[in-house]
Length: 277
Image 1: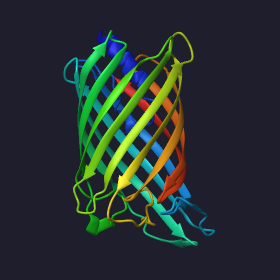
Image 2: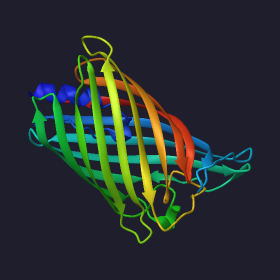
Image 3: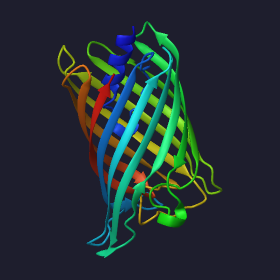
Image 4: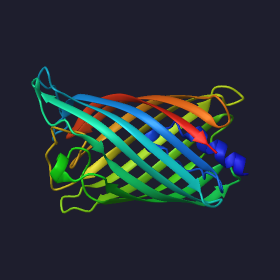
């Protein structure tokens, strides 16, 4: 049973890249996961407060390179502890003029995931609570590496086997940043994937997810447009993964923001490795 739990978990690791490896399948008691990742993101144009696309002047754009570390520990057959941290390097220009270019540690998170029910060990219903803490100060870098305040998130996850080698994952949750301007956010993801061979060496996954953000601050932060306070965006991604050994898998994904309001139109990719022991 533990092996099935762990295999299922790794099938879902490529859902949305290393920044979102929290899936609905339990890791398994006394099992461990370690995932280093590299992500590139770029945006130029954006959607305004009315949801109309705005093309920015030549020489305008935002770029970010992020190195992330994620770890997961199965503390029981139903409960997992999940920890993540990242280091980001950002650059921003407007009309060819360089703006703030901060780099440093971003937000860290620690989460507890608990499996409420396992339906014939093929489908799993789980809940997860997460605490988000900034590893930077707004006064030293500006509010560009993140929202700069403590946050918390609660979400529910339903994951399982569809048929044959196909599988799915559904997530929905609420995120709150503890500041008078928030933001408060609704987060969601829907994923479908399949193994491309009987040995499950190769896997392909497609997912759609987004954020609806609510705040008294209606401005788009030009030096980091990803800090959406009052708006929304929907992002799609395609991922491919290959298992080299039972202890090492490598994944790659590409993503694109398809629609939004008061949010950037961005694209990028991620590469990450999964070590299990």
